[in-house]
Length: 262
Length: 248
Ligand SMILES: Nc1ncnc2c1ncn2[C@@H]1O[C@H](COP(=O)(O)OP(=O)(O)OP(=O)(O)O)[C@@H](O)[C@H]1O
Ligand SMILES: [Mg+2]
Image (tube, rainbow over all chains, first blue to last red; front, top):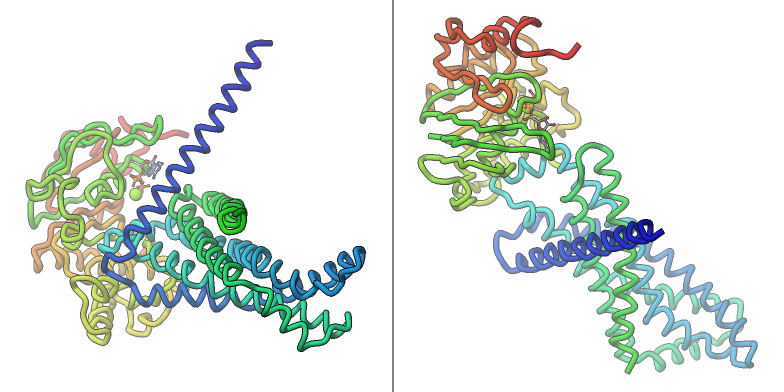
């Protein structure tokens, strides 16, 4: 009996130690990345390609998810609001729902699915086929040449994507509200604009920056630390997306608490 | 000059290198032979810091490789990886000219491309190949592109990890000649891993045999036939029976 308890406690302890040391390695990796930002050389070409991949090519999927979510949100708030005779709050709630929470979180999860996975798979394959070693022997630091451009692109594309998602989400709500729920378009827009505060928008952008950073960083970290063989690539990719999604949601909670708990 | 002093390296319980001592003189062509999985690739990767030894030290021109400035140090080396290790995101010529397009050796794109095409020609590849992507090439062609990349920036010390594996006999001959030329003409120090005895005959000044984690025998190529070492004899003559066990 007591032996099995010891076993369980030991397993739990091991789990905690592993988790904490993994977190420590991650933080060190993040610091190492950030410490490179202002140190030459800069690889402009790599950066533009990364920006294209992370930002521009993410626009369709981000736009579509935001559109449908905003539209669904309008329907839900209308029917929910009707229960206590306040269906007219649709524009306000759609606006703050999208800008404060759904816009950033959707973007975060979408780029975790799209960008984190592709970065991790690409880098892990490079690791497995010795391309990372080859880079080093050609006097090029992988941290600078591979990691820095992608993370920087994430930092910059994140808030832009969030701004796009916020706008399109609100637009989705607007379409549904004006086309099927009988709202007046001009009043809807006015209510939305008047209701949003600069704190709402600021928090949205801050989340965009944080999530863009997390998504690209996780891709790079798990890719560069991949195991050997095809299995190593698969494991790295899976782990990177999991970690990115969980960390993005955790960061979302933390940032929401910082901005709105006062 | 490259000096290995008592190098040990294990991966878990797999003790790959167990006290390697070896010296490669400047301008010398050293060939490493040894069974598959004995740690030949690991041995050259330790010089470049791609794998850290557990024990011992490596000196290049008297300097400990862990205590040098990495960028300047690495720019003296060229390396042909066993698996090619070409960057599959860029066309062949950019792979070959990688070093010439960034960092200290950077030069205009047109010039870099010209050098790349010239190096490709030296390894027997036509200029048309320059704009293809590595994934579109055969295994042997990839190997030669990788070889062209290793010599493109004219380094002082070059490592060739199985340069002729996967090539037809004629192309192997071409590559062997090329390596010989590079050593003789440019005074390069070369370390080549090979299983191909014709390569050994063409390329080597000296031969070292790695066996069970140490240098079993090392000497001038001419003396290899009379080494008196049964391991070397067995390897050179490709006999299944001998002191090197084979699992069957
Ligand atoms: N990164 C690594 N992680 C774990 N084990 C490794 C690693 N690199 C090499 N090994 C192991 O070290 C041993 C020697 O590998 P190495 O690639 O040096 O062999 P080799 O002598 O070059 O063989 P071959 O002639 O087949 O290329 C092998 O058993 C291999 O499994
Ligand atoms: Mg090898």
